[in-house]
Image 1 (cartoon, rainbow, N blue to C red):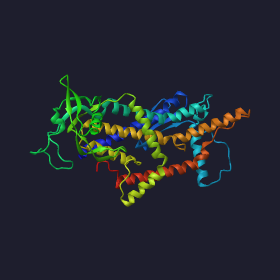
Image 2 (tube, rainbow, N blue to C red; image 1 turned 180 degrees about the vertical axis):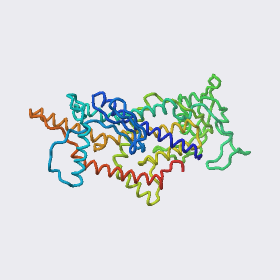
Image 3 (cartoon, rainbow, N blue to C red; image 1 turned 180 degrees about the horizontal axis):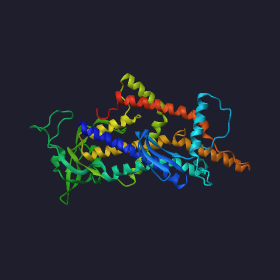
Image 4 (cartoon, helix red, strand yellow; image 1 turned 90 degrees about the vertical axis):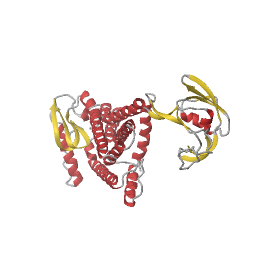
Length: 432
């Protein structure tokens, strides 16, 4: 592992994550501006501002900690009403502060135009809040399409790469043929490197896996193999021998079994997949990641247990930004073709964007899904009042949910801290 390659991988991950966050916020910003909402700030990161520039009524900028982002819209909540009995408790103070901060964003919107977020029709509020997560999903689809259809999947093709001269016993440390070793069935049949398999035992084959499946099922049977050799189709007779080899079992695990064996290997090449494969894979992984996030507290607890006991981490478990950066560095530094490493980093970024998509749909404030629920509840109340011909109700005051938001934020900080610590002292091991 070279330090430079590792650092390049980490930097690529950080830059990719920053772009993902920027696009997420653009997903909120674009529809908000299109619907006339006044947006005061568009910021990438948190903490002290490193750079900012005002364009029109919006300040665009970068902050010191690139671990998120936000846009500041006027009137996320309705203006506070005069309630004199909130008390002086901790949560009551938080509610009052939230209302005061929200009221500040409403200054200058009383010009007769609906420029506050809470004044938008319900469907527009939902579009604004879903714009961010959907942008992450679209980015994941683009990244996976580049990997699967642009770069392609490494696939064993029907072109023969090499032919074994003889058959060596399974598990043998012998590397060269010795006198008396039996010739391999492929060599005996006259198969040569560069031959392209056309059909095996009368069945056309388009992948080496298809050919192997037929061969493995026909030990000690004489079967015809048609190959394309320099543009001419040649029929050869091959008798696979029964040999003990590692094969893929029905459950997807590698097992040792006695199967037909001929002794040839395939040329591996990047095979572009259909253009829709990226989107299909993104939706499949969305379901997988949703399963992890649904069990996030339990998964984080197990991660903490593994950290204290020294047990091996679940490679399919949750990661922090630190863990993702470390994996990106390891992928960049591994001894593999550069296309393989590029594809792996793009897939990692796609997975992070899918995680951002799913995570932000959790129906709890301050996440986007929580704002969607508030908008839908407001719409339901208005629809109910209209159905029964009652006066329109007051807009839903989500500042009352500040205590719940506080608990959610604390829980997220705690879980994030556990994952960061675990990724430092007991990281996920993908390369041994």
